[in-house]
Length: 494
Image (cartoon, rainbow, N blue to C red; front, side):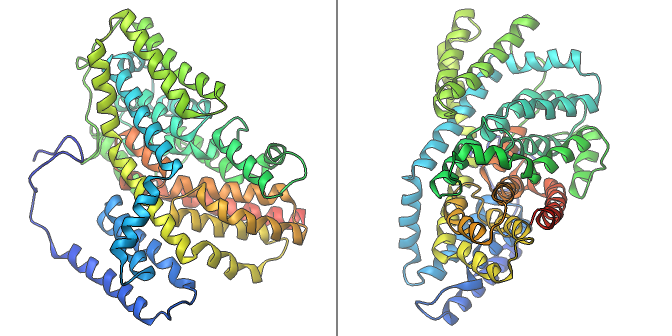
């Protein structure tokens, strides 16, 4: 059976539809309509605000389709909000999201990053780097540990980490029979969880400014952020777990067992994945050291330029693309037309993950109008004590970020609420900030439609749900260890 090479390319249906999808959709709509009719107009939604996110989770698990699950959950939320004109509300929110500066930045960064990676692959430099690494890496275990090490080194931004690490290492891990799902787990685990632990990252810059703006400290927000790094437990736990997995000291859990068994049988790339195996002769090769330089120099320029422009990845990738085009044209590795075609092809490959993230932003806006974050905080506040505060902040915010897929946007709402509560109770502020950042990185890591997870799966060459289902047991284990740690620290430091 042949499959389309790209998720958006036209194709004939492989088989007739089944009635299961229609039944699931009918049950979802019946539930939403029933809740809408029973909800008094003008009153708070309360627990009903959780329904759209629960619908997304159920549909995604049942169908393994991320974009469709987000769309159904968003429509369900809009029916709750505006039953008489949910189509008009969908159009308004969609337009508002697409005009949002964050989404525009995301589209440009991810699209150009896709083009940048495509240039490296089209010129043969990615393959050259893979051949070079094969001389250094002799075992499967070494290939996984080197992938984790590269992910830790690219700490400046989780988007850059997700795309660059996977592009550099996936051909190498293929040679050693590593499933793309395990590669995606290692890449994702060294993205957001590592970025929060380094004060020279986009995460640190963003959250330090947010903390200072909301009066969390009388000194600089960055100093409070640095003080909180030891208490960002999820980042440390996720790093420990990924090193155990890469080193072969932790067994494969849940669906990862099946993925690894398939890879060891000779199929590292799963069925339906947005990637194909690349043969040794499918891309041009230069002399080994020249090929490695032509791969590493653009990567170094991307990281250096992003840091030069105050951790601005958009400016960094623009500079890196211009540098790479000039570098390759001077060496006649490719024609100008070939490089421009590669940029456009790379941009096209990012359309599906960008669509998922955009619809995720629509769902976030709907959840905000339903009052989901405020409901979660209000429901938990009566049970707070100083000792329990860090653990409850971590668990509640982790649920909210996981449900919304917004590791940054949620905290614009929650920090102005959580910080005053912590100050009023006299809780240690670095510990509370550590709990907030731990929740943020867990949500980004575990949520199957978060930008970091989607980009990790895209870069590694598997579907978002294939990545999410194989990664979730490790993320859940990390969350359990983190929550236990915050319970212990809350009692010790209160």
